[in-house]
Length: 468
Ligand code: 5AD
Ligand code: SF4
Image (cartoon, rainbow, N blue to C red):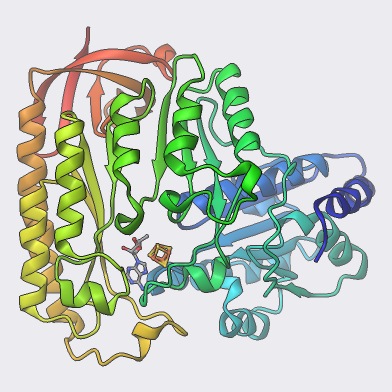
C-alpha cells in the first residue's frame, strides 16, 4: 500500500514527464483527450478527477474522438445493458485506431474491476492500450507514462487498497453545480448488486476536508452541491475517533456555511436513515426538500432475499416521520422488478407501496443478473417477457401518480435553480428544491441563478411556469 504522500510524489514526477512526451509527439500542439462517462454520479465525479490529472499533464478536451490523442471510457457494471453499450462502443474504436495508430485508448471504471470482463476486453480488443480499475485513478500519470514510453498494453486492476487519496486535482464539468464525494465503496452486499465487488470496502473521507471543499465551492459561486456516496447514511463509520462524525452532523456543519446554494445528497439506505437526519433536513437552511430513498421491493420476503436489512414497516415508519417533519418533502426511489423468485404477489406489494408513499418519480429497473453476486445463483423462473409486463404496470401506475403530483403543483410558487436551455423549445429548464423540473420562458443569462417561479400548467409530468 502506498501512502498519500508517496502518490503525490509519484505524480509530481510523472505528470511533467507525460506532458513532455506529448509535447514532443504533438510538436508543441496541445494534446487532446476524449473522456466518456457511463453510469452513476460517482463515475462522473471520478471522471472529473481523471480530467483534473489530464489537465495537469497538458491535455485539453474534445467531444470528438476522431481528433483525440487519448480516449478513455469510464464504464459502469451495475446492469448488463450498461456493459453491452460499452462493448459496442469500444468495438467501434477499432477503425479509429487503424486510422490514428498513435492514439492511446483506455478503459476504466466498475466493469474493469470484474476479472472476466477485463480478460474479455484484453483478448477481444487488442487496440485497447490501458485498463485500470476504480481504485487506481491516483496512479494515472504513471500508468500513462508506462504506456506511452513502452507502447506495451497495461492492465492495472484488483487493487483493494482502502486509502482515501486526497489532493487529486478536479476539473469540474459544471460551473454552478458540483459533485462532492464524501465516501467511497460499499459494505452492504445487497445480493443483486455488483458495487461492493467493484468499488471495494466502504471508507469515508475526512470531514474537515469535505467541509473546507464545500466552503471553497460556495465561495467560488457554486449554487448546488451534491454529496455523493453509495450509502451516505453510514458516513463516518471507521473514521478515527478524533474525526468521528455522523452524516447528519456532516450536513448540518456544511449547512452552517453562509451563501446562496442548495445542498443535495445521495444515495440514502433505509436501514441507516436516521430520524436525526430527517430532523437535520427539517431544520436546515440549504438542504433540499428531497429524499431519494430506494426501497427496491415492497415485499418483505424479497427484501430478505435481497439482504436489504429493513422491512416494509420500517421503511414506511421513516417515510411517515419524514413526511410529518418536512411538509414540502419530495420522495424518489429505486425499484427492481423481477428479482429471482419474485412472484406476482410479491410484485403487487411493490405496487401497493408505490401507491401508499406517493413518489415524485421513480428509477425502475428490471433485474439484471451480475456474475459473482449471490442473486445470480438463485432460481429465476419468471420469463423476461413476464417481468417486462410487470415493469410496464409499475411505470403506468407511477405515471398516474406523477401526473397527479404535478397537477397539484399548478398555481404554487417555488424557488428554483435555472439549469439549462432546452434547445428544442428554447425554454429554460429549472429545478425545484424537491428535484422537479419546471420549464419557463426567460433569458439564457439567468442560467446558474436562483429564481422564483409560479407553476402555470402541467401536462402529465411536464411542468410549465413563469418567473415572478
Ligand atoms: N439489476 C437491476 N438493477 C440493479 N440495481 C443495482 N443492481 C441491479 C441489478 N443487478 C439498481 C438498484 C440500485 C440502482 C442504482 O440500480 O435499484 O439502487
Ligand atoms: Fe449496491 Fe446495496 Fe451498496 Fe447500494 S447499498 S451500492 S444497492 S450493495
